[in-house]
Each structure stands twice: as structure tokens, then as C-alpha cells.
Image 1: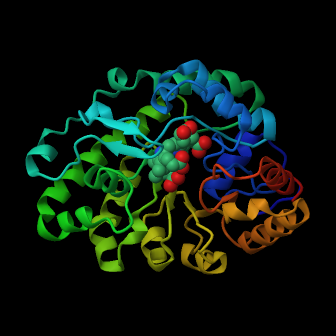
Image 2: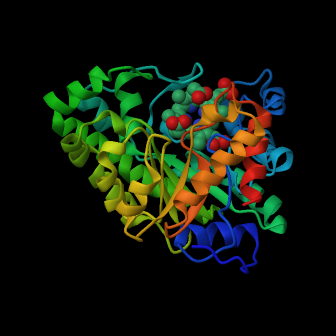
Length: 347
Ligand code: CP3
């Protein structure tokens, strides 16, 4: 909802947009805004492994702030990965560059052995990073975002052992050993709720749940293996303190299900039609998105037109946060990101 006369800080603009209260224009940030497309990121990352960088509070804080200082985004997402809490469950992982699981989880014994991590001792650096970021950006009234991977996407990598095209091992477990899969998703759900609530306690003002792979399922499977876990997470988070953004990639075929979770915001990928999403939302949630990241290769003028058209389409929604439909890519041109942010601020 628009109110041209509204005035407030970027924190207020973000929180009000998430909750559907009137603001002057949508706030803007980008998924994966800290990353390899930025030469300044590559410099900090030089000679350090990705996992070590996630644990290195100074480096992680520095790269989290780069998109704010260099490009002017209106939110900071702390630098980490959806797999950061997984070693705390006694699973050995590495990145090359995507996550690789040393011993993929395929048996009941392996699922039973998964521990609920004591997060404060397993990932103390996460909370340290969040606290430091809040102290750096509070004076600038910039909101801090936390995030976690959704159970299905985490399970997809844990069972496959790495990214996959067909996810055959995962689907095999769903079909042949559903009770093992259910226990795995239950354990990941419990961890995710604790992890996000702990991020909120440490200073995250909005949290985003990433379900990158849930879209590989048909609707009936989605209702069984994804939806109940989203609902459980949405109901157990401290949402008075921090609104929840739900992102499901490649999932236009389960739009009704995504909206039925009643998160505060639904983050749309670029394949999702905004008109349809507005209708589906029925005023219950705000929208985020949804420029195709590849469109950032266009000219600034072209990017501005695309941003204006997205904002106009999302205007009837209860609230709108401008973002991409998926994360920035290593090949994303910095100039394109800059043009996207400028265009949003000019709305
Ligand atoms: O948005 C941000 O700026 C915060 C940082 C962030 C990263 N990963 C940093 C990262 C976030 C929010 C993520 C989420 C994430 N990680 C998801 C869900 C969102 C999505 O993109 O679908 C998934 C599926 C992962 C798993 C993952 N981590 C993959 C597949 C890869 C390798 C491929 C790639 O895109 O880089 C990673 C590594 C990773 N995570 C990097 C970064 C900056 C690259 C590491 C490097 O510097 O080499």
C-alpha cells in the first residue's frame, strides 16, 4: 500500500512493507547480494575457504556490509550459508563451491544419529556476526535480515550428498522409506525453528526461509513433504519481533499452498506472475521480488523500466519488497545491481 506522504527510516519502511502498512515506496535488497560478482568480495575471500569465511566474524561482517556501502541496498543480510548449522548436527560438509556432504544420509541409523545442535556453542560466530552488524547499522536505521534453509532443501542436499538434477536418492527415500524421510524433516524443522529464533534474539529484524528445491515436487508431494513443515516453522517463530519471508523457487504450480502458510511475505521467483500472486494472497501477506537475476545484464534504462513494471504490478498487493526472483549470480554485472537499486529508490 502506498502513501506518498509517509516518511520514515529504511527499517520502518521494510518492517511496514512486510506487515502491509502504508509506505512511500517499496524497500529494496537483493538475495545473495554479498558474493562473487563483487570484486571487493573476492578480495576479502582470497586465500580463505568459504566455510572459514563464514566463521570469521570480521570478514563476514565486512562482506555483509559491502552491498550497503558500495551499492546502497536498503537491508543487510548476514553473510553465511543455509548449511552453516549442519555440522552442529554431526554431519561433515564442505563447499566446492556448492555444499558436499562427506557421508550422504541414506539410512534410518544416520537420521537417528542427527543431533539437535546446541546453537550457542555450535555456531557462536553467527550470533556474534548478527550482533556486530546490528551495532554497525543501527545508527543508519538499516534493517538486518537473518535466514535459514527450509527442511526440504536441506534434506535434498543431505540425502543426495550434493546438488542434483533429478534428486533420485531423495525421491527414492520419500517413496520407499517415508518414515525415515519424515524423521529427517522433523529434525531439520526443529533445528530451523531454534536457529531462526536464536537469530532473532541476536538482532535479526526480518528472517527469510529459503526453499530452493521444493519446486521439484508435484502438488500432492508438496502438500505432504513441504507444506506441513513450512506451517510448523511459521507458527513457531517469534514473528512479533521479526516478520517471516518465505521463498520457494520454481514453484508457480503450488502458489495456493505457498500462500496458505500465511508467512508475512512471500518471495516470488521470476516465473511467478505477480497478478496471480496478488489474487492468491487475498491481502493476507506482502510480496517480494521478482526480477530475473539475468535481467541485470540489461542497460540501466531497461532495468528501470522492468523495476517500474514490477512495482506497478505489485501495487495492489498489501505490501511489496523489491528484490530479484533468485540470488545474484557470480556473473551478475555490478552496474546492473546499481541500476536496480537506483531504479527502486526512484519509484
Ligand atoms: O544473500 C546473501 O548475500 C547472504 C548469503 C547467502 C549465501 N548462500 C552465501 C554463499 C545465502 C542467503 C545463501 C543461501 C543458499 N545457499 C541457498 C538458498 C538460496 C539459493 O541461492 O537458492 C542455497 C541452496 C545454498 C547452497 C549453496 N551455497 C550453493 C548451491 C553454493 C554454491 C553455488 C553458488 O551459488 O555460489 C553455495 C556457496 C555460497 N553461499 C557462496 C556464497 C557467497 C559462494 C562461496 C564462494 O565465495 O565461493
